[in-house]
Image (tube, rainbow, N blue to C red):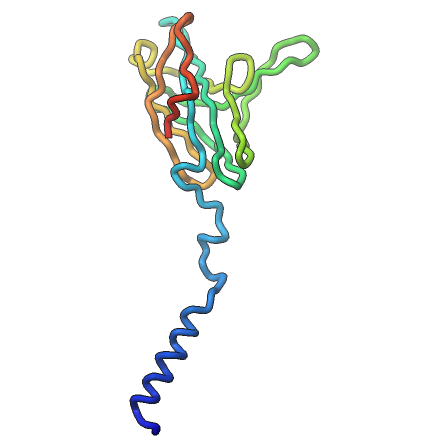
Length: 168
């Protein structure tokens, strides 16, 4: 028997199939979305500097917990004019340093910033930065995702932070 109820049922069944068909229209599936846990920031610290210093150095380990490459594009701090990513290296027996615009963190791997290697140069400290026990730093990734944390300032001889207490 045909009638409005049969047509209505047929329309409902067809609608279920049409809306259940997967599409590739979801743009989130084609971007490198970075969840809060894609990169874990571990054991961050800044080396204390003398009162006349115009720069301080920062160190951290970045652990990419995702299955995609992540890229650190910027680090900033309201307590400094600017923060630059630097790399120390030896060339012809001479120690040199160069600024890097980004740092790639391969999927599932760690990148460690440490003395005599990758490090953060915190340039132009504010009046209170050199005497602060913590420095606010924001890490920005290529995806636009940011992580802000308070990084401890350590004097020479202080125990360096361990990676057992990560900052997310």
